[in-house]
Image 1 (tube, helix red, strand yellow):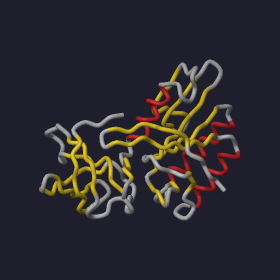
Image 2: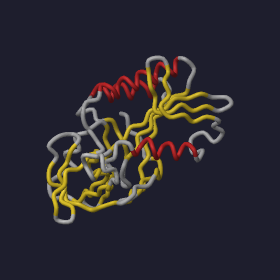
Image 3: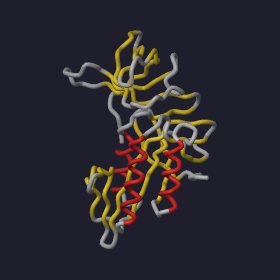
Image 4: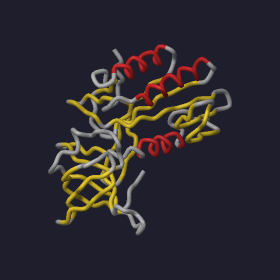
Length: 227
């Protein structure tokens, strides 16, 4: 996926989940943050950030913050980007080469899954999670407690019991990663649910990305450590 009209700025502050103040070309602008997670280890005053300039005169903010520089590493922090890059990846046949249907946002019973996939012989659901929390090359999810994430995992386990295949895809929104593991320190229940899902046949995949200031693409699988 690609962005248009990228501008470079210096992060100043984030008064709430949706808004940040960023200095762009010497002027401090109010910008939209495309990630409702905490991201406290990323959005530090003085860091370099990258923003997509909008051309909608009805918007209250002219720019959307999409990426941040963390030392030598560029991290995409657009929470909408993981689903977009996974969709591109699925359409290229990287998961199921013989897929005859790939449908985003599929409702099933009381659930809404990110993707429904179908081949002549198999039917599957997939949930996608974006990962931006990194500690010395180890990638962790979630960065804040997520009851919704636990609910999604339990629902995928139900799908397995009903004869479907099920996948959880963790999109690591940066390039360098040693391995991925659930963040039990922040939300132990999520880690327990993920390990249960693995034991019941839900396929857990983690992939890093090739990240540029104006683009993002899935790159390669990263080891998943559940123990």
